[in-house]
Length: 145
Image (cartoon, rainbow, N blue to C red; front, side, top):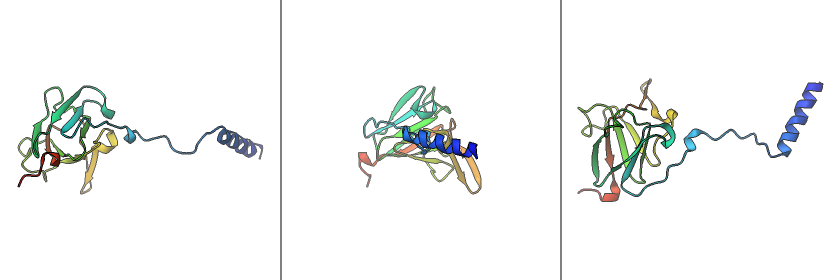
């Protein structure tokens, strides 16, 4: 009984000093600042770390082979607001068939390991460090007729 009383007293004191029972913030809350309306940010590490580069999505339809130094090493991708990207690994289907296995990426992007894992039909795939091509649609540039 003494242990139970001491535990209750400890909890009461902890809460009186501002302790909270709320869980620690998830790493998914890492924010990315948009660079404009027409870019896609790539980094080589989780949570926007490591080497960085920007891809310019300057038309409605944009097909990118991931640049040297980032090819198969992308751990964070962040399209600017309005842009939707599809990450792929197969060059044969790159940008011509987005129904082929791909991962959809919208602002603010994907920057954590748990968001890279996509399950479909009972199979999970980890896209981290796997994407070699991006197809991005940028309606900020006008939708083609």
